[in-house]
Length: 204
Image (cartoon, rainbow, N blue to C red; front, side, top):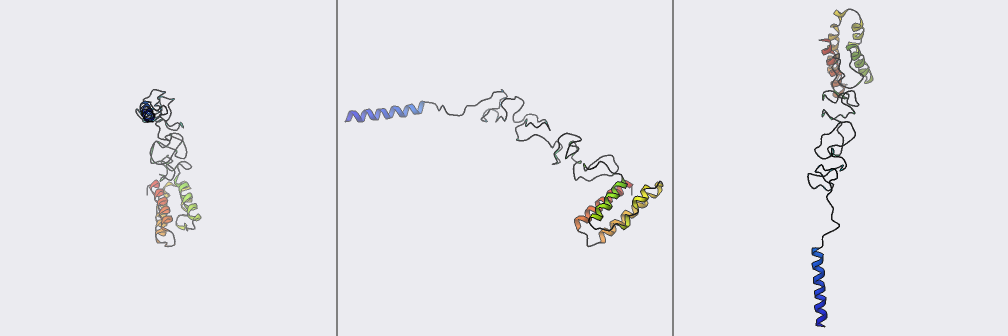
């Protein structure tokens, strides 16, 4: 009986020692196929999101608009100018029509007559187009435009000396907006902003 106990104890001891010294063959193996220093398990320089391309790894130079995530930040670069509006190319793209200038994007304030389409909508506008748009926008929101209804006709005549008279009409329209308590503050601000932009374009 004692011999049996001794042999059993010895067997347990040998088994315990063997488990302790045999390496874990199932442990994850660190792989760096493309040799860029970044591995599949995150050891080395960091985790590689494409171990088949040496140009793709954390910190790599991101190429915008190509649909490839070179720097492994989970997305391609589509907003180069940082204005929060994405594009599919640097200039002439959509929805941001100029991804090199943060002042140009959908919803930006349009500077009338400067040859630049700041709001990425229908190109730059002339003062006549801007007043037409202002009148249509006001009518759509049930706002009366009597002070500026003749402005388009004045700007379209061949007498440039009359153009400055439109400044007074726009001022009268703004004063009308400020006095009308039925117009919401947000709509009022939008109409005043549009009117002011036209006045600046006319040199008022």
